[in-house]
Structure formats: structure tokens, C-alpha cells
Length: 361
Image 1 (tube, rainbow, N blue to C red):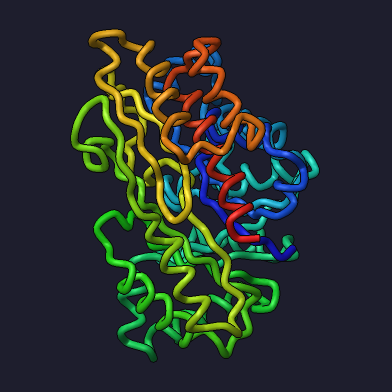
Image 2 (tube, rainbow, N blue to C red; image 1 turned 90 degrees about the horizontal axis):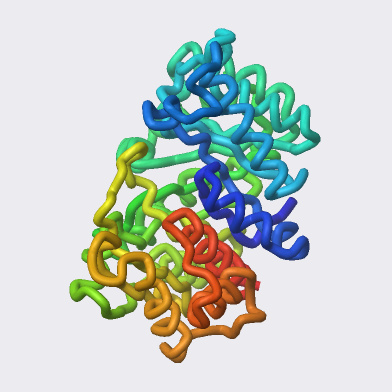
């Protein structure tokens, strides 16, 4: 497929609900990368897993089946970035292999993602060797280590050649993800320069397309909006860099990517009882952030009613028919729903995907 948008999403309930409520014509235009979340002590205590003899295996199976339920059998990319690359489950199989095979058994085509900075691990390599042989397509993910290695062009290209040859990859069937991760403190010109260097070095391989991916959403809402019960906007730096690159590299197939509305470095398994209420609403080249206050103070969860009104009255609101997420915002404004943290990940992500797709078409 030739997608127009490649978001990196957590394989969690909020993102599942967001994807389940996307129209089919939107799903057909995107190629998401789903990250298998790690199995934390908090998850182990849940009823579904605490009495299981193979809790990790059951967890990965459950997440992949929910993924298929939410996104159907549309093609996705699959990675285990947050696990150790050689992590195995109770059956002795690598996490990536298990997740891939569950998706395959459900009729979903999963594209295995090759982590540039991880592939030299023997167990990880052996897993990739099998999956790359089985899959018609693969994805190569370049992150911080890769961008550093590019400063030594010969070394970097030797590494790319070794990956291609060792895994017997056909570059025409491989897309490249230029993953800048958290870009909240990275300038647009820095993203652009690093991406241009990577594309220049890799142009001769004839890779299928390049994704420019980053996240402009901070881990903490106070880093985006300093005052409680107020609002502000922040630039979507990955989008602005992608737009600049399309002008400077008009012959290169460039696809927009991001991390939806959740920062990729938010720690797993941390309970934050004093988390502020917030709505992250995607607008043209920016995010509109409506910030509340601690959910343990004042009107607690009911603050979401006021935040929803803030979004609807902001001048940016697209209307309740624009997306499922927009409809939920309006319902909250009318005090028909309130929603907790996972639900607002779902609403915000759903609007974000719908907006991003409309923006780049």
C-alpha cells in the first residue's frame, strides 16, 4: 500500500477505541505502527493475568486480538521498541514473533519493523530473519543512534548494507521510518537537516517511501500550558519539517508520521492521581491544548465539562460530525459523558488521525 500517514501508536485500549471508530476510508489511507506495550507489575495484578501460568503470553495475545478487533485486517507495522529486543515469553518465543503470529492467524498483515540500533542482538536478528522471510514487506526504523552514525557515512552505509544482505531485504518492499521521537526541544531546521542527510545517503537504495516521525506533545501538560484552567497552542514540529522537506525534496516519496497525542517517553505503569485534566485538539500546524487542574481537587473529573466547552468555543472546533472524537467532545460539553484518562486518549487520538488525514490529502 501507499499510505499518506504513518502514526506510531501504543497497542492500548485508548488507541484501540480511537481506531475502531475511524471510518474505513480513513483506515485505508494510513499505515500505523503499533508498539506492543510492556507487561508491568501493575498489569500482572489484574484479574485476567494474576492466576495465569503464562501471563505475559496471554497479555500479548489479548493485545493483538484487540488490535485486530479495532483496526480490522488492514495492514499495520509492528514493533517491540519498549521491550528488550531479546525478550521471550513463557513459551520461549520472542515477543515480536508471538505478536506477529497472533496477528497473522487473525488475518492481519503485519509488517515487521527492523530497529537499526537493535538488530545486531543475535536473538532479535534470528526472529527478524524468520519474519522478514515470511512477510512481503518490511520496515526499517532509524532513530537517534542511526542519526549519529550518519556522521560517519561509510560506517552507516556499511551497516545498512549488512542489514539488507543479512535479512535478504528487497529495498523496493521496505519503507524507512525516520523517527525523531520527542521533538519538543528539537528545532524544525534540525529535524529537516537530519532527515535530508538520511534521505541523501539512502536515495540509491530505492526504498519504498520515507516517513518523517516525531512528537511535539510534551510528557507534562504544564510544559505546554503553564497556567491551570487555561489553554494554549504549540507547533507540530514534525509536520512543519515534513512540509519543508516536501518542498526541498519534491521527487522523494515522503509520508507524514507522528505519535498521535501521547509522548513516546511517558513511563509505563506509573499511576498519576494528580494528573491534570486535558484535551489535546489537533488544528492546522498546531495543537490546541485545554488544560485543567489536578483530578483530586475542586470539581475533579467534572472539570472535563469546562475543558470541552473551552475547545468548542476556541474557534478551532471542527463540529460534532467531523469525527467520533469531536462528537465525544460535544457530548462532554453538554455533560452527557465525562470520560477518564484512557477515554480522552481515545477521543483526542481519533480526532487527531481524522484531522491529519484530511490535512495531507
